[in-house]
Image 1 (tube, rainbow, N blue to C red):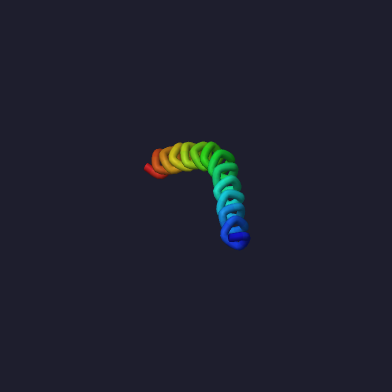
Image 2 (image 1 turned 45 degrees about the vertical axis):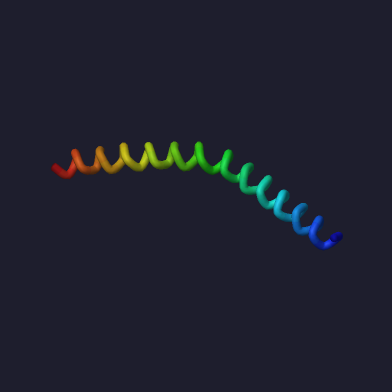
Length: 48
C-alpha cells in the first residue's frame, strides 16, 4: 500500500504543478495572442 500512496502523492504534486503552470501560462499566452493578432493586422494594413 505504501507504494500506492506514494504514487497518489506524486500525482497530486503533478496536478498541483500543472494548476500553477496553467494559472501562470494562460494570461501570458492570452496577452501574447492578442499582441500577435494586432501585430498581424497592422502588418497586413501596412502591406496593402
